[in-house]
Length: 583
Image (cartoon, rainbow, N blue to C red; front, side):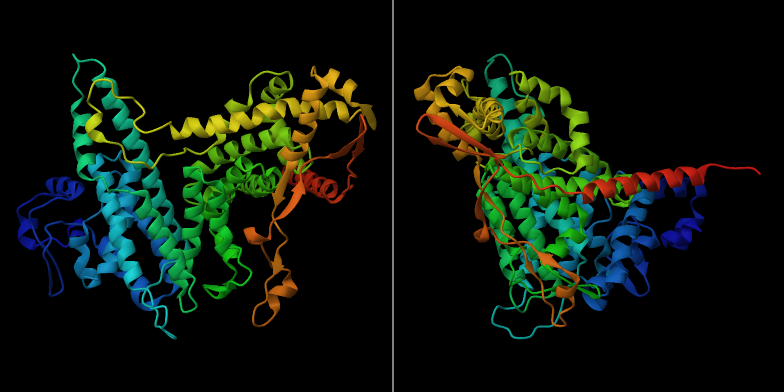
């Protein structure tokens, strides 16, 4: 029963009735010790047997058996079940309490700390001390992982650690999420203190003053250079020839995380370049269970990683004026997600409640792209969703009103400023609310709006050129309410704005048996294989004082029409099957 489940001593059971025992059980705090077999546990915490079994089995799968089919249900199923039943809003037992179940394995205890800390911060609003603790937890974990990594010159090494791809990505994803949250917390705390300093009669709130004091004593916490070091180091270690499968997983998911970080910092070229490791045509296949996959296939096998890569790559391409690549990245994942929503497959994935929000943000980005890049690139079903959700906003833009900013503010990521402020200045009179330079979020929005301001004029100019095969420069300038001298520069500007880099073609992946090539497995291309292209749907040139316009040849494609009709037919058949007919 409950007593046996908790492994409580007989003397404790005899002196307490069932009701008081249950109350003590719910609190998970006691002054009694616990024993299992002949191994004493120095912790005073009491917890169910299922926790003991979970820790033992997870450690065995991670450090001894290395069998994915054993680790997957423990990580994805058992942990969530125990959490929901016993620790829905509280922390798990400490690492010291369960250390005897893994023989004091330092690396596994660091993994356990990260796993339980991730749960706790997801159900409770973290305090400043919790954020600092999270930083030290990740530093300890990455230091131990790198310490156990095989030497670069070693020819053959034995595997000492195994983590499934989902676990590897969750670690990296949460690492950057906490970094992002810390940067935002740091800025908000400084701004709150500076706002209080403007009024000499007011004193800062206790939690603000406490947070400033803790932040000033931990100025190196979540330092961006250290975060970058760990990500780059994990990529370098995991791409060595002698790296085990787990280190390869960590390397490729670290590159996805690095791409996201560079995007949040506003370095969009570095964000795209960080993905070169995944799209490297020389990269070896990596073992995922019994299958051999390319790095790109590995990332796509973890949907949350694929979603993060596509979204942040799409934003980076957009800010680099690579509109066709941005539309390709965002449109592809949106098509996949729409099908997943219809079938219900995405709802089975942990964290699915956030998928619909990110889907709406990507649709907003596609609305921007469909307006500034006239080349047809969207699937019909996605184009219909764009029109349904943002037709009014796009109509306002057509009429000359503002609309780009609202779409971008809704769809863009939460940019961060990683610089550490001078906390001693926060409480001095006259301190600015923004402690260092300009606000990173507003700066990126302003950069985007400066680019969109030119596109309003260019779109109007294009609409007139589409009506003619040749037209005088003076006449076209008058249509756009410009003088000829000013308008000639806009003709050149339109060519320049729509000239952009495009991703190179992928290459076939060849395994040792040659099966992948026959199956048409394709990998993406590295950024150094990008080529110059254009996002324009018309071609024009100026000869004398005449603009000659040649509309781009449109390739008629019928496969989308047939696929849509097949889908509609399947829906009709399903509807007919649901009709009950009594004869």
